[in-house]
Image (tube, rainbow, N blue to C red; front, side):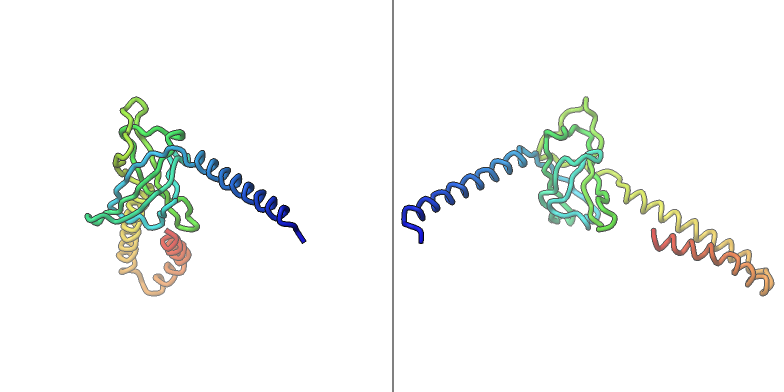
Length: 189
């Protein structure tokens, strides 16, 4: 059985140890947090897959995180960013886009690019304009690809109209693998 003096010593030791641990964690967290600069981005399209705490990168380098996401009174998606000025200095002309961080999970990130080093600095609390993203480019190319497939299908249909019935079956059997591959490609896209 422990004496009262021993219990007091153990209690003081545990209290002192807890203070040291908490102080150390606060110190490390303070160094990690540092002074972040706040910027905003206003997206007119969906930000599905972007989450609070998500990554912000400049030319692929992680430079900050998403601090808040909300829909404004104008119906647009507002994204608040915290940028580490030790990792990047933003200049006038920088643009933000929404890009895939992980295709597997559908997670998005805010990608920053542009801004000439000789241009003026972008002051904190500024709104970073949006640019054309890889997703936008892919969407427009997919639309063009579908239009091309439709034109090809129309030409095939026109060519098959005057063909005898037995010949049509033979041609369809020959192009069926191509059609299956095209369907698989379209569903993957």
